[in-house]
Amino acid sequence: MLLGVENTSLRKELTDEIRKRTPVSGKLYKRALEVLPGGEVSGVRMFDPWPFYATKAKGAYIWDVDGNQYLDCCMCYGVLLCGHQPPHILSALKAQLDLSIHYGAPLAGEVDLAEKFIKCVPCAERLILCNTGNESIHKAIAIARAYTGKDKVAKFEGCFHGSNEYSSWSVLIFEEFMGPSDRPNKVPMCAGMPMSAEDNLVLLPQSESAFDLIEEYANELSVVILEVMMGPGALSFDTDYLKKLREITSRNGILLLFDEVITGFRLGLGGAQERLGVIPDIATFGKAMGGGTAIGAIGTRWEILDKCLDLMPPLLLSGTFSGNALTVAAANAQLDYLMKNSPQIYLDLETKGDHLRNSFNEFAEAEGYPARATGLGSMFQVHMMAPAPVKPRDRIKEDVQKLDEFALRLRLAGVFLPYPLHIGFISTAHTDKDIEQLLSTLKNTLKATFK
Image (cartoon, rainbow, N blue to C red):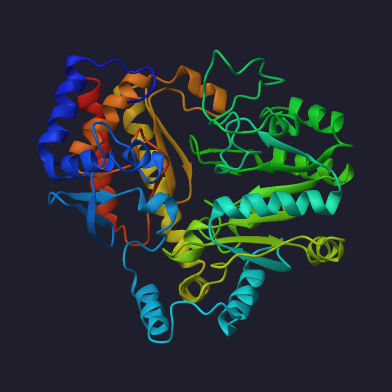
């Protein structure tokens, strides 16, 4: 259940209807509770009273084991830029399966992939392949520490960088624990993190005060890490703010790391850094780059990586499944497709995303509903507050009761968004008709929530 939401009679009515429509998923969830932590492989997949269990997907749609069809706006949390079962990915995977699943030896495709990646990503002169975006963050922090010889890591309040022990802090909004806005408290997101992680973390506010903190800890800071568009809330950093951040980190010998696991190859071939014209020292990637396969990637300058490899002992970069044959085949096919169809593919996604967000906001404002959509490009998130939040702390004012109700109603209306209203994604498989259907459903669900 969403934190702070009361179990009202209306809520029970909505969750009972979900139970009624998804009985087979309910039975599977009951079994899962006996063998998986909390009944889930990944906690973010939880939905009250239980998640639906998928059985097939095609294009912009997904079906559950009970036969229900949903318009998919989760898109595997941003992975499926081209929708479910895109022909170019399926063809590449089938061709590779005829050869082998994995080799444990270098393959020509990894060289091809690196050359394409470096051509697309402004900060990249070298590519490091790994298996997930989460892993790429972990290795990127190691690179920054090795290169600078300094231990501390700075991250921004409200940014999410996976489950790394140096980034799982102050992601969610808990007003009673957050502390002053200019020097926020370090609030752990999960159990099991060592005290040494907190000692080596500098938490930054999304304000001018961050620059003072960076200067204060400059001699100890190895890297400043941020999501240009924050996954939690779909909120974006101002370009001028990022330019100042770039100047301060450069002047103080601190590396700047853009977490582009979500934005990489989704906002454009060069990601957020190309779009905004602010080039970091390191950037991490995942999700859309792999075309549906598990992938992580790091792009950085050659002198950074070469120095790390020349240290004694050198930086360790290894992984049995890093650069596996199926992932490399899919990623090559994905980059080939995107490079061939850029920039039109991104212009189309941007047009659809702008239309969705702007139309929803115009409707909500005209009707007097305290709800707004944020986001960028093909990404959006609905908030139960008005005006729209700009910074993470603005979301303290969000009506969590209405957010919960809206999420439940949206699932019953046949739209798949992670609960409770995680960032949503549209894909190239979402047609104009799909976007209009989504917009209509969002409006009708908003009406029902505030009736």
